[in-house]
Amino acid sequence: MVDDDPAEHVLLQRQMKKVDGLSVKLDYVADIGAAVESVGTGDVDMVFLDNRLVPNDDFRQTAPLLRQAGFVGPIGLISSDISDAYFNEFREYGVDFRIGKDEIDGAAIRFIVSEYTRQQLSEACSEDYM
Image 1 (cartoon, rainbow, N blue to C red):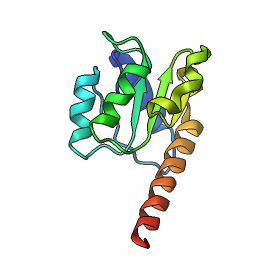
Image 2: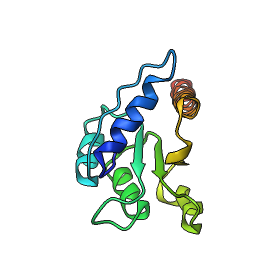
Image 3: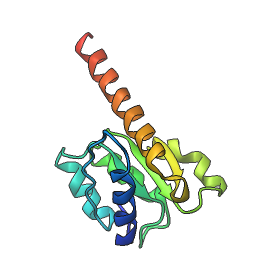
């Protein structure tokens, strides 16, 4: 999770614990520089990226940095408000999905993790047979 507010990490961790049968390790970094370093280790499977990370304006500046660092896993954009028109362009900047912070609950987390884990497994299997 990349968010400049550590309280958001605590809140998301609590939501993760509410999902039965799902074991997720949620690491936290507070800025995009640390996120770029983290994804470079190869130990990150998915990124939850806060829309606004100071000094950047929004995800249109930060998400591409993760892709440029070689991260190919899913990036989920999280924000307290995803109603602005520019959120419709999320895929153009390397983001796979977007979700409002008020929408994040156990069911949403289960869906996101299962959907993107299944997708990654499917792609890996396809590559094995090419």
